[in-house]
Structures are given as structure tokens and as C-alpha cells.
Length: 590
Ligand code: ADP
Image 1: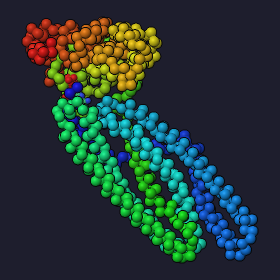
Image 2: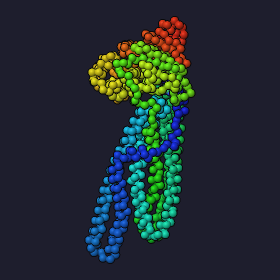
Image 3: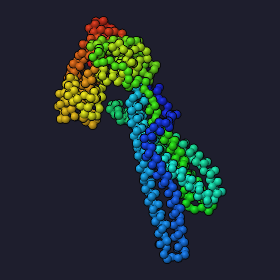
């Protein structure tokens, strides 16, 4: 289809990333199954935190004992030491155990919640309308499955572990501070929230900086990605230097942004250290001990926790966004026509359609077309005229804006889409996509429950059996990037086998635009002719050479059928079809 050639469509439909909603209800659904482990983590983490307050106090006691003995009787201080030392050791041991215990529980919760989120999100993504994928870039969608879930997971773990520690130690800190100096405590109670608030403010500023910097890095990567992905074109136009310049501009921008982010973080850290140390000094001055420093730092780190909560919430919101999104065309549900009474007649009646991503451009206008059962109908016309769109509507990838499409007289909107796609229509695409698995599995994709012999029968019908068995590993040969590279004609024939294994009543051929060599074209054509017999066939013809034997040739122009007839009818009529034929001959495309 022609739409990939101009990038204008994307700009119109970008949803601003801004205010996505975070739903606690959805989060709760994910957490519920892990509740036991989560409670375990919380109890253990709390225990570890309480011990963490105790340990410095005991250490202080121990030091006092040592100091006293050093002064008074330098004799048998080992015996006196033994009890507090052993107790301290035991506390250390226990603290260590609790710590590893809560980390185990927490990482279990985190991993399982993340895995569930990924699975759910993947499922919701796959369920979406084709239009959804027109409007969203694949990379961004995949990012939600990876980076956003990852970010949510780490914030979640961090908030729980640090949060518990922070709360217990802050409380502990205030209690001991109160014992030391009630006045100073009062002061701290007033000052602390202000500090945390100020910290959060600076923090959120830094966060925005960091997000912008990240986006800039992504932009630079996009430039590189495009250039490397299209390296042949870049080379063919000797554009290496220009691409390098474009990349350098983006990289320099991101470098500058990251530098200022680094400076911001540095100043923030420096300032908060100064403030923290002043508080510690104040405490000591008021008669406290150095312990206070140990206990104050978590209080100060609550800024950090507030930030993590926000980060987790915004990552979660991005993950949840598509979980709530319902496709307008359901995957399943609706009527089915029993196989033996299915005739395979299709009628497009007054269909008007524009793509949701380009509402202003009407691709089809009052388009009507009948596909008689068992006959082959070809659609021809200018490239970009809407031929492939007709096939997409029949598959119900989109619904028409007005008008209806009937299958055996029933509106396809009332029929089960999974049945139409899975059992009624066999779709053979212009550029067949094979998955990175065995030939056997690729063909079975058309009918998951097919036996091996059904696969072989379909391959034979598609003229593919001979070349498949010629591979050393036969049907177990892995294709795609990690396996053997197939020629265009071989891919086509596997795709034909994949469509035929469903035994579809209707066959849609969106013909390859790229010419196969004469020999493969002959075998592919042969396979298609055999596949067509006894079926209703719709050929989306991008080249005219292969459709001359079609029962009916329809010329699509201005969004509707303007001419229809056999090859010779249309030739003798001397209209658009005759014109197209003449032009293709002139281009030497035969
Ligand atoms: P043909 O198959 O005749 O070459 P298409 O049906 O592929 O034409 O395209 C018809 C028009 O619809 C073109 O202008 C094309 O740019 C546009 N178009 C095709 N697919 C999409 C899509 N997924 N989203 C938006 N516009 C599209």
C-alpha cells in the first residue's frame, strides 16, 4: 500500500502522553494473587527496619562498656563484653535473615506482578483493531511491555522496601530525638516537612529534565535506526555525510540535556547533604549522639521515595492505558453459517470508507461490488486507488463508514470475526510474512489443529512440497532471520499452503507487486490456479499480467468500480483498463 511512503498520517493521531490515569483498582487486581508474599515481605521488612534502629543503640552500649572498662579495670573485660557482643551478633544475624527474607518475598511479588502485567498487556494489544496499529508505532507499544513494566516494577519494589524502612526509622528517630531534646524535636517536626516538600519540588523538576533527555536519546536513536535500516538507499544517494550530520545534531542535543541533568542532580545531592549534616550537627549539639545521623538519613530520603511513587504511578498508568482499551471490532462473537450451507457470495453495497487515521481522505465512495460464488473477480486500478482497502474491509480489519458488506446475504458485522478470518477467508498477502519457526508450524498457522498429513497435503496443493522436502531438514527447516532464507516464490507458496489448509470458501489474493522471476511466477501461478478452483476468489491485482483469465475484471477509480467485464470486453471498450494495459506494456512490465 502506498501509505508508507508519506509520513504525514502519523502526526494527526499522536495521543499526547500527558495525563494518563492510574487505576488503583487495576493494580489491586494484579497484586491480589501475590498478597501472601507481599504481606510476608512487609512484615519481614518491618522487622528488619526495627532491628536497624536497635542495632546502633546496642552498638552504643557496647562502646560504653568498652570505654568504661578501659578506664576502670583493664582486667577481665572480655567476660563482661561477651553478653552484649553475642547479643549484638545475634541481632546482626537476625537482621540479615529478615533482610534477605523480605527481599526474596518482594522480588517474587515484583516479578510475578510484572509478568502478569506483561501477559495481560500483550493480550490487550493483540486484541486491538487494526486501526489502533495504524495510529501507534510498534516501537512505542513494545516499549510499554518492556521499559514501562520494568520501571513500574522497580519503583514498586523500591517504594515498599525503602518506604517501610523510612517510616520505621523516621518514627524511631523522632522518639530518640524527643528523649534527647523535646525542643529540637519540635523544630525538626516543623522543618522536616518543608525540606521534604522543597526536595520533592526540585526532584520533580529533575525528573522532567530526565524525561526530556530520555526522549532526546530516543530521537537520536530513531535517526540512526532509520539510516542503518535503509542503508542501501543512504548509500545509493551518497547521503552518509548528511545522515551523520543529522545524527550528530540530535546526539549533541541529548548530550547537553544530560549534562544539565547531571549538574542538577549534583547540586541537589550537595544541598541535601549540607542540610542533613546541619541537622545532625544540631542534634549532637543539643546533647544527642552520632546515632542520629544514621536515623535521619531515611527521613531525608523520603523525598526520594515520593519521587519513586510518582514514577511508579506514571509508568503504571502507561501500562494500564491499553488494558482498559476495548477494540471496536470484537475478536469473537456473532453468528456463523454452517459449513455445508455456506455458498461464498460476497456483496459490497454502497460502501464508503476512510481510514480512521485519515478521516478526511475518502478511499471508497459508494463502492458496490458483487463476488459471485465460485468465480474469480479481479480488481485493478491506479496504485493507491484503494484496492487493498477492499480486501481489508472484507476481512473486517475495519468497518465501513456507511454501507454494508454481505456474506451470503448476511451483514458481516453480525457474523463472528474469528470465524470469518479463521475459516471462511484465506488471505494471501502481497509480501508474505513467515514466522521464525519451522515450515511445518508456519503452514499450521492457518489451522492450529491440523495434522502433519494435512500440512503436507496443503503444501502439495500449493506446489511447495517438492522444494520443502529438498531441504535437509524437510518440514522442520526453520525459516526467517534465524533459519534459511527462502526465495520470494518459495515464501509465496508457503503462504498459499497456509491459506489453503483452512479450506476457505473465499480466497483473497493481494498480489505481489515485486515481480518474481519467470520460473517462480509460473509455479506460483499454477498453485494459485489450482487453489482457486471451487472457491470465490478476489484478486487485488497490482500487475495486470496474471488476471486476464479472471471471470470478471473490475476497474477501481475514484473510490468506486467504473468498468467491469472480461479482459477482452474491457480491451475492446478502450476505457481505463485498456489505458492501464497500454501503460504497463509501455513500462516494459509485460
Ligand atoms: P492500492 O491497494 O490500490 O494501492 P490502498 O488500498 O493500499 O491502495 O490505499 C488506498 C489509499 O488509502 C491510499 O491513499 C493509501 O495511502 C491509504 N491507506 C492505505 N492503508 C492505510 C492505512 N492503514 N492508514 C491510512 N491510510 C491508508
